[in-house]
Image (tube, rainbow, N blue to C red):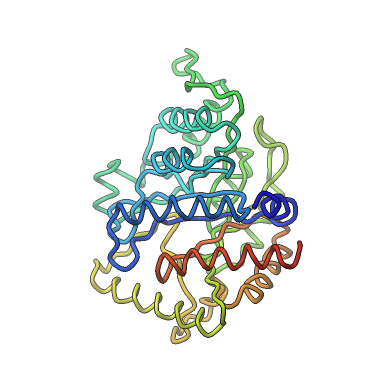
Length: 341
């Protein structure tokens, strides 16, 4: 397993983005245990990172606090990078975010990646219950990012008095911005952060956002050159027919669930992965979700890698059940090993 992990990380940097879905009426406890299982297997199969999301009052997802789940998973893994995809900064004090993730970085040295998002992460009532006037908070996001950056670089002051986010880890954590448009890319460039393009929830292919990010990048104390990741929805199976059938099943299930919820949908930074519903009239659906054999999915990933000039991909696999979700990640890792790249 260690040889496989080394080979993968040296050539193509694959990671897991786990939305912590409650599949097939699983309890929250079961969904969270499945996330631990996924992270442990991903580490053994050579995946470079495990990231998890933040959502609020969404019945189908079980993770509202990435830092809590990452602490739990960190204690049950040994080497895999751990990250948030994403902490929704408009809701929180920059000092509290810096303290929480510096604590994680001290617990798991060299393994912590702090990904930020700027969307509400839930419906309007949950958003207001969490932090009040969200639009007012998001309008102040540049100031919040600046404060967080200063805190992570130990140069923050409040009323001209130094304030330090403690504990101070020996190895600093990396800072990333997640998004689907040019605005998020510009924030990442301006503050010297890495940029994660959420292809699986965007109609765009990312080329313009990534271009603007690279052209506008200003080096920071923690990141000297632009770094790009892409989050992509995939589902691998032994046969292409199975992968397409399961993707259609997942899409139909989410459509039915959507009718039961309020017609006002969440605009989360990391939404439930959209799938390749063959019956869908949306011409962009196939670009958001790659379904098929490991070979076919691998070819699509290679295309994205070349187009956006990055070898760092975060893979989102939502189901259709936990066993087949795990198999999807395994099949791709096995294929990667078999072709020896």
